[in-house]
Length: 96
Image 1 (cartoon, rainbow, N blue to C red):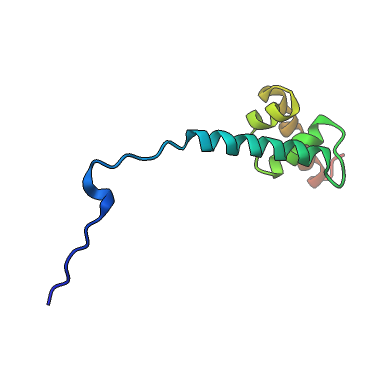
Image 2: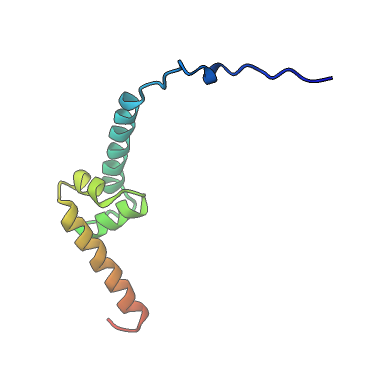
């Protein structure tokens, strides 16, 4: 005996994907707010821009998002990240 194929309501061709842009805008705003709170209320409160940038990077923020949170430019955020990476490499090689 054959089983009947189930009709899928989404395969009708007439279905329209819901517009998620308002939801994505709100999620973005919530994400940015959490970034601000993380920088302000971190247990070891970062004082310098480089420390703040590193914290936000560890939380998954892009340089562009970090710049928006910190009131800086994406270029300066990228420079701070680069400086932090070069310092870590120097420390690993025994340089100070």
